[in-house]
Amino acid sequence: MSVSIDQVFVKQFEADVHLAYQQMGTKLRSTIRSKSGVVGTSTTFQKIGKGTASTKSRHGIVPVMNLNHAPVECTLQDYYAGDWVDALDELKINIDERRVVASAGAYALGRKTDELIVAAMNNATTYVGDYSTGLTKTLILTALEKLNEKDVPDDGRRFGVIGVKQWNELLGITEFSSADYVGNDLPFINGCETRKWLGITWIMYNDLPISSAHRDCFIYHASSVGHACGQEVKTDITWHGERAAHFISNSMSQGAVLIDSDGIVRVKCGE
Image 1 (cartoon, rainbow, N blue to C red):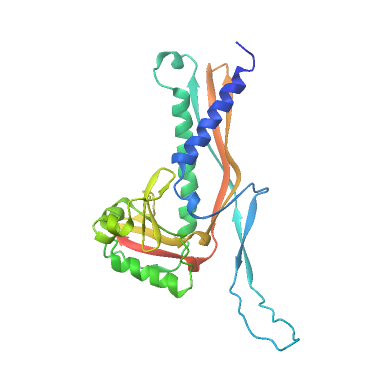
Image 2 (cartoon, rainbow, N blue to C red):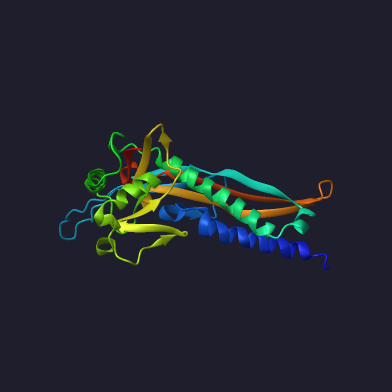
């Protein structure tokens, strides 16, 4: 056997990790503002204010908008997910252990990515509801009203992330569940079924903040939350002779931050 066979093993394993991470690892990363290739421990997202147009006299000076720039810093953190694969165990099983471990590591890092994003969303200060009811059409329309009052763009980049119970409650609304309203060609995000209704792409996510029977859901514009990545999922495989096993380590460096609280509404639902 070639002495470089381990490199083939590592590259194939790493390819599997990346594939699993992209397909099933994270649900929310593609729904927000994301910056890759960050160098250093943090990066900055620019929050730019509104400009105002005005007139000028003939041959006069064009008025300056004096846009307000408010930089928002996003700090990156390092995360790891690893496991042992015993050499002799691989001879006794009839499953592809490499792929199983690759998927498990990618899913763990994907959940951490979404956890960071939800933690950033949890800093939202605008809310509707009081946890006394489930997710209703009235609550959603009230949340949309708040976004529209703040001139949040209705440009197809509005998203709603809700829990399992809230998804079932929406399915009880004809406008949400009927193909006559939402159509048949529904978008998929990272292998997750979504629905487009009221200009919002709805995503079911099971790890939203919950306390007792109080569940927080979020309706937001993609530009209101930022995600930064210093290192995508990276794999390291090392042989440990004293254990007669490979240790497979997956790692990443990422962070998330709330950029503009005007672009996100917390929906307080009873569960």
